[in-house]
Image (tube, rainbow, N blue to C red):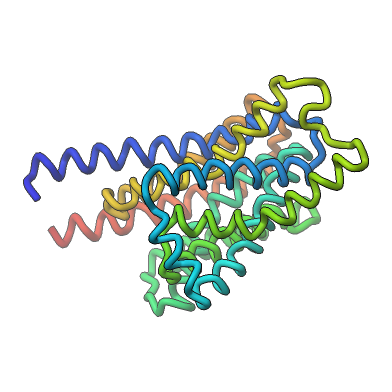
Length: 300
């Protein structure tokens, strides 16, 4: 690959990744338009419209062959069943956090997630920690402990999101299926449950979708399905073109946008305790990101 084409690939990768992380960062705002819709219906509608969008993508881009190969593999299907459960748990916690105005917890969770992924790499992929990475993990732990002791409660939303998304990423890394096909299977496994619940709401005349005609709420429920699948597709395309050092830095765009929205747009309370906790996490993240860059520069 020539230098010009490599530069073009990097720019394309940055564009894809930037689009994914910005959409993920602003996604909580979309849920504000459907705040009056019950949590379970929101999740069911999100599943149905996401599956519809992914089916169109699979057909239009000619990926039926890859999808059939994944469906024929018992091992792949069993693993994807496990990731489906983790994905559903993540969605439930994420929407619950938004509905209860705890976006700071979401932001903290996605800041912690890459650091937790380092521990997973050590435990399951036999990767080795540098002294700087150990220091980053210790500092991040201090931040979580500070939050727990000062507020008198464990930041379970932050920890649950970090753990679930970290384990989900690890499992999806080792299973031999691409992002689009894997996500189609995961949403497909949830589809019967979602459809049954929507049917239950219709039978009892409790369905929010279309209750007052077709308006902003209905449109946003449909778009939430697209917002679920599209950023993941962009992220996959970006990851194929970028070095991990660049991608690692860019992944903090989403939790930073969550933080800004929580404090400045949604007026969530930001106390000294939050400041100390986030300062620890930010410092740990800085160490985590800067150390490999310095090591690469020294090697060069």
